[in-house]
Image (tube, rainbow, N blue to C red):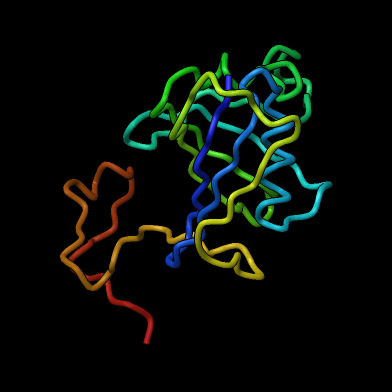
Length: 167
């Protein structure tokens, strides 16, 4: 089976690649193809995560066994066609656990034409930034009306009405 997978880097700018490969290949071949397509170097940890149409992160398929999983959950033991068998199936790929390069993958075509002997990389759009895009963390804006419903539940006798910030 000939698979075409679209890979989108999680960044503000459009950085998109398509990779065409044999669905019988193992996920580690897709991993290596992504590294090549986005000009990333080998040697960093990476994982695929199953996902749904809302891009929610599901079960992990690791590059290396850290002892907390069996070998059945490794990239080298999973065929692409077994993990993402249908057009529209999705995964999240995280590369370099310190910098968290995050990619969204979707199967955009599956057909019976002969698959390429080696993965083909189709560059669609964009240039990968030099550094991993920063992840935006949601936080509480302390200038908003934030309050504790029951400050006494913390077990102390603080008079919350007398509390003043340090000047």
